[in-house]
Image (cartoon, rainbow, N blue to C red; front, side, top):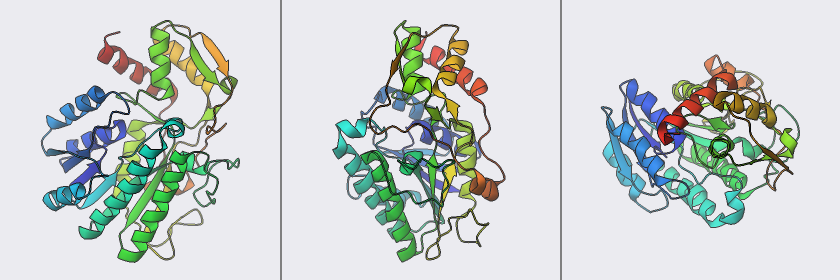
Length: 332
């Protein structure tokens, strides 16, 4: 197949593009190489993709008019996986304009590009943060998400609504997925696992929010990529798969959680990291920051109905894999 992946220099986009290329698909990677975090890490990811047959890179920003339609006209993709976004819950408190530009303007430009160049299936990344202040767990896709706690979450909810409208108006088969705390080798430096590893190796204390009692539904990237890959073959054009389905009654549109459904306490994650590093962490206990939630917990009922499984890699496997990559990449 011909597939366009936006955000291909990001950690999820990189892993997905590498998987698709290994299967023999032609992949166009579209990325603007924003400086939100280390651009060198992003370029190192793209350098690996560039060694694989079938990869073509486009360096441009979604917010720039005309760039994506030009790329799609050349690549003629059958599938688009939209992963590019301004990420980070806490950063949205400091730089809200970046979220408006990337996640709202960028999303609008993407939808217009897909409208002009129709595809078999559009898939795009939303976030578990969309559930916001909803304290009911597990988070079910059929629950109304109406209480976002940050602009990041609000921008992703808006993206879901925009995509549904375009799906209804122009018949674009669209699957939105809400990710749950993805981690992996080549991960994002602003996320907890990366930050903790860096500080523990440097002998610096780590900040542990909510006294370590906060819980996250950690998802290893290989499981996430497997789910996206299988969902790509399931455009929302068939009949409903049951009561848990979010198939729209007025559009070929579906919303799916991608998480394992097994929340882990933050202090347990740190214990596993200490074991993989062979070092103890000095823990500074802090209250939960604004915009953070005490727990995330994915319902996996719909994902299992659609693809026959859900993420299963335990932290005891995933964290050592991350640590091994980190030590090799940073020579620590």
